[in-house]
Image (cartoon, rainbow, N blue to C red; front, side):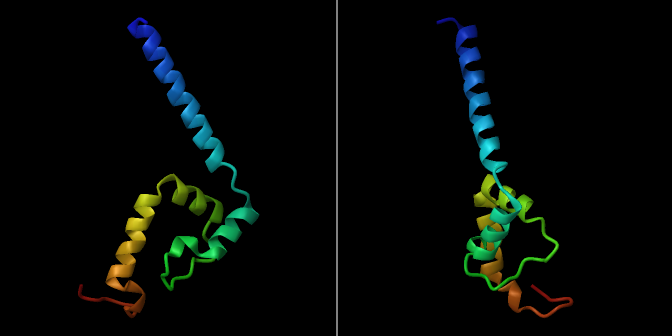
Length: 92
């Protein structure tokens, strides 16, 4: 098999994988996203509430596109107990 054929196959596999991922991320409906947000799976035990103006479809989509980053962010909130700090300036 020549290099060009291998490159073509490789690029086709990438395109197929990306289109399958895009279909998964675009399957969120408003109802499904609201239900997922209400389930609080994303909160990982934190006692935080989502802002009422959050686009739940965008949040759910972004959460599943990069769950490790979200888990790291929520882990930071858990470790530093930011939900117990009063509003205003605080020394950390």
